[in-house]
Image (cartoon, rainbow, N blue to C red; front, side, top):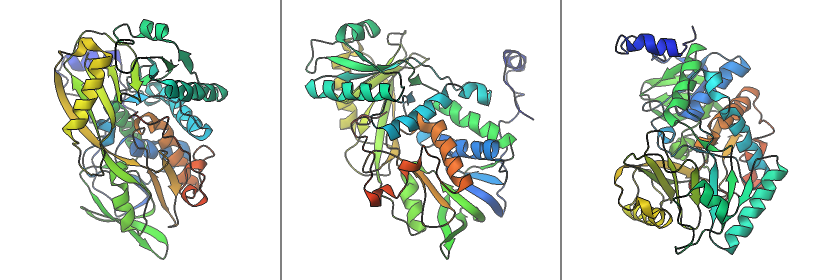
Length: 416
């Protein structure tokens, strides 16, 4: 029975202090065998299970999560969504995702709070101007809404920004109006609800310790709740993907690093778009609760921690205060970190591998959240058909052998 949320159901349950809502999804014990196991209960993993059931008619599926749903990178990002990447392959991938975002609340009948407030990428020097204008032109050729904004237009969009009296004056920016933000937890919950309704087993607090293989084929996984057999296994474990891949004898070209973010005390609305800057290495948006959501790039070392160094926080806030002097006396409420897995070309891997029945969705670096529905949709196709969709074909593991890399370091230099 599909759970429905409406004004009337909210009103009805408010009268009983919201104590009579039904559970959003089941918590079953794992079966001994599944046709498909998805390792990782974040947005990408839950979405993959949802699309496997909805679009490919597959039912005997389990999503296995070592903690709670959305407790990894899905709940540890800054929720920015955009598709203004440079190369055709990346543009098609992220635009596919953005189009799914635009209808996701309706499809899931669950408000993912997708807000198309626009994203600005600032230019602070001549190199920035040339690189960003090149990207704007490439976006337009791919039918993506992207425009060059001069300092006057930027000041109109963000009146509080200091564009001139700073070390790195703002000389212009790219602007994508359809870009924006969404609520990270809601995405995971929405996919989990709908996948559960179609019979997908969502198994939390169950750590996958090893991928079992035999004679070049996947046979299942060893977990903290015992061995679970499967014909096919899709791994969507973000920063820990390399660890799991090695248990199957596969070495992936990934590095894992901490990525930090922080939020301020809530204030009245002062910024209604997302502003990113590569040169000063900081970006900011304002949440619906009024908090400033702030972040930058990854820490400069490999690690599996979810913390990061204080020097990154200090450098980030120093840049934010220079661009927005009015934030100087604000207090920061909390800080957190995620573990991002980064490929040499700053592009993801959505691919099968040499072991039959084993698939990987990883290497998203700082751009995983924005790709959530598109990544899940394409990964489900790859697993169901045992071959990639035309959109994710360029992001196979084979590109690291052929040399056909999709180098997006310029478009993904700053987190998100």
